Image 1 (cartoon, rainbow, N blue to C red):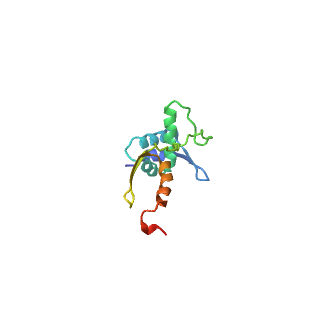
Image 2 (image 1 turned 90 degrees about the horizontal axis):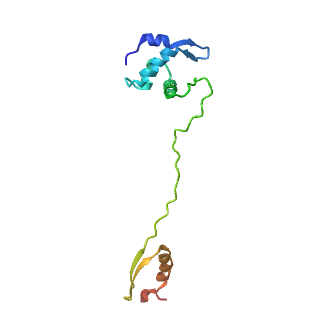
Length: 141
């Protein structure tokens, strides 16, 4: 990107003792249009002309508001209440669909049981009972 010396010369009207600058409105508009043109990134345009990139982004945002028909607010005035750039996340509890569980049980003594349509609670009740059954002679005391 080639720096326009005429624009750079007209941009800063006055530098304050605290380092703050007063900018020429027409030169500022040209800089905003240059930043929006896509020739270079906004940060590149700002740094080429000695302006803080955040400052140029703010000017562009104000320019867009003005063009959208909203009243133009200067940066030195109280800022309007801005909406958050974040999207709220709402956590929705996940309720699992009831599942039917099927158990095919074969005990060591040859007994078989095919249990279908059991709920989770049924299985949790049934398992301790099955675990307490003696499966073979080696588990007896």
